[in-house]
Image (cartoon, rainbow, N blue to C red):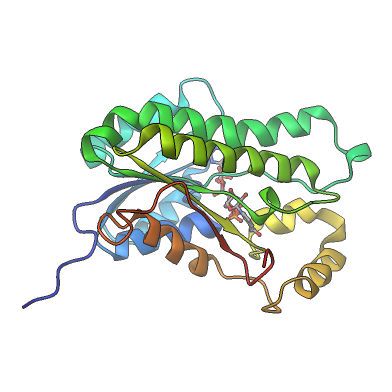
Length: 250
Ligand SMILES: NC(=O)c1ccc[n+]([C@@H]2O[C@H](COP(=O)([O-])OP(=O)(O)OC[C@H]3O[C@@H](n4cnc5c(N)ncnc54)[C@H](OP(=O)(O)O)[C@@H]3O)[C@@H](O)[C@H]2O)c1
């Protein structure tokens, strides 16, 4: 008996697909046989990923926090992929700073990118996802599960995303599965920029607080995102928040 082609025919939307964890998800999903729409604000980043991933990857340039963005992503997915089987809300914004040095506008930006845009996209994609009996994976963070001194806004935004994940999993079952991965530290653009001037000290502290003694790789997170999207292997998994964190939340 020949082995089934995994994922063949799946149509996957990945926000923040032009770098870091999102790029790894795009590459892994395309490698498994999916057709992918990679979404982000910078055409050059998305084009680099698409051009080196073969013809299965399409790009859509948009800022997910802008009015009308969710509808534009869904319409691009319908046009280029023919529908949506899976949605990965990976686009994220972070800035690490103590409360006195980060104003409410910074908190607003994190909530808009990390939670509000994710909810809007799930809502807009729902008609497609119900037809396909599809799946959503939200890329959250261990920051949503742990106390995060100096990173309280980020942690709160990801805690909200975790709550959204669990509530929608129950609300949308059995039509659509909704899960989240909670990565620990991964050495990406977001992590380095969020840490700012304190990056070296923070890096040492993070490694010391991670039982596996190192940062994770984007690909190690992408593997679990793809597990959760697997239409057969994960068919009975919904409402799960899966830490992929080197033991940081153990
Ligand atoms: N790195 C870590 O340690 C870590 C740990 C836990 C969770 N995470 C989460 O993992 C996800 C991916 O982050 P990453 O670490 O891979 O960093 P990254 O490489 O900076 O990825 C973030 C992506 O989000 C996109 N993005 C940001 N704001 C956007 C917006 N308004 N509209 C559209 N796209 C937007 C960025 O693309 P453009 O700038 O080109 O638009 C970028 O591709 C985030 O949700 C983050 O919170 C990361």
